[in-house]
Length: 454
Image (cartoon, rainbow, N blue to C red; front, side):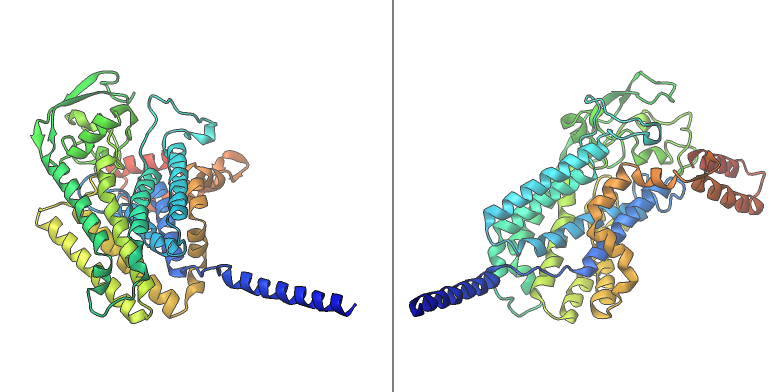
């Protein structure tokens, strides 16, 4: 019996030691960066706002061509956040093959949801209409662009990750030297983009008008170009490459340029086209196309560098100094390029000045949240945004598929037409009409359009 007791005690001791070893080996659940979740939540909320209200308030909608409105910050903010998340997430996966497998799987998920939500499958959900003609499915979109940038930058991060095991040397530019290969690759991406944008010859092209509201519906119209390095709507290399590779039937049919002064009477509002509007006003254009998505990779590359600062620098002051200085430098560079007419701000072409301005703004906004949340501990003020940021994909799917709008518009009083949105719109319009000049034809047009849309 004594021998049995000794053996049992030995087994118990060994099992306890094994449990301790397993606890030590088991990876600890990493703490989320609350300021990054809140920034992501703000970006998703902005996306919902500008998608639903951008048509009525052009100052928050996408700029028709050159320029940068509130809506034009949403996409680069997403890409910047993806870059920061890449740096934070991949440092926890030591094995390269495992990391690459996770990156590929997530990329495929983004591509699937992108094609489903923005390919044209969901439309007029209030009339139970859905489905898409495969001959006209939109191949590019927001999630597809994010998938491309995520895949490229994550693979770069994985293949150059040996830098993360090194101690950060002293010196102001040490963080940049530590990841010098990533900056070299980013510079190569920029050179390829600029060389293609300014060096590609754009010939004349034609298209069939698909808009039934046009008097030229069904006709084939020709756009005259024969230029190189042009950044105007009809003759830029971004559109030419998309028409050549994707096919004009797989591009976005309602580009923001339709609200430009050259096309519509009430620019920057939507409305009837001018009688002498050029033919390209009826043409499709892909704002998330191939060449512009290559340039968009730069936004994610910059985001990764900000994530590296968060990883390597342990004190708040050093982090904020790098983030704010780099953010201001990017903002100033982008503004100078735009106002000297060197490179205009343009979201649809994703120009370098646009990359600089939006990335600089992202850096400053994130720094502001970092101060409020991680330094001043005011996280409770942003709990709704934090929840949205932690469930960004769910909220995006519900917004892009029209579930949000359908839910809000589903509450009515007595008659299905008397929805809460409609009644609140009438209340707003009645107050506006009291202050407005009733003789203004332009105002009457905007009021009528507002009522019809809601």
